[in-house]
Image (cartoon, rainbow, N blue to C red; front, side, top):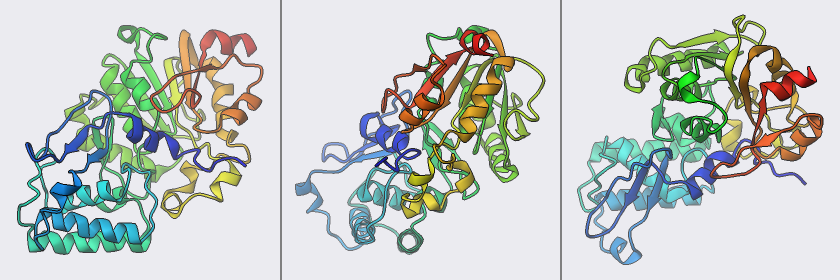
Length: 351
């Protein structure tokens, strides 16, 4: 039986193996330190030693607020895979968010304000009752050091491709020579913005079939474009894959498309059913959109261009669907067979 974790594994594995952008170390010597890894993101909370936690049971301390929230989350038997590793991580993040706290400095003994406690109680209750990802309640998500706005019009950002972008798709292309980049299925626009940040001489065309998702992407561009150095360099295009793509060729085409197979879709936890199905479901074998993406890439890549596609846990289905292609599997922090690459030469030889 195949795992249902097709679209889920990238983010949770990243949290398990990657260095988090916010690594909250709750030691007595320094209440909290922030570790800003160059490419990892989301919260990974390293809890204080148990002996230290036992010293912080003041009813209205920050620590007590966290422990109370954690107990509620655990009791609700929730699923974690949208930026938090477990109930404790989520409780710390929620407590900080509700008090507009400094992620870089936690005072566990500090009095937790009554107004913040009231907000936190409501948020935890909503998380437990609705089983929606916490990112939909706070409207923020983190991906490899980049912060983005999210709501229920898009899936919560998570992708193996993010780290490959920040690695400049090395050694397959020369970052200094990249002028044209195309993303298919952009969703919240997070990967397109990261690509524009890394390939600073490039124009990025970001395509999605969903107008609502593109509204979120444009909102992120407006919020963070100046800070990330991407303002004015991304074209947000409503299109069914290549249908309305500009008539040009690209140095890089990449996509994290819907690829969860039908059997796996039926087994997703409630948290994933809160996300748009259009952004997850990839048909019987998960390859419906991937086939179209591969088929149309040859005519749209420059001679030395590359196509990069994420397929999550659908390795076997991808190999079966593209037997005639020389798929190159790119190694990432979480998997060795979740993202494949095809060169323009390979694609054009089969065209």
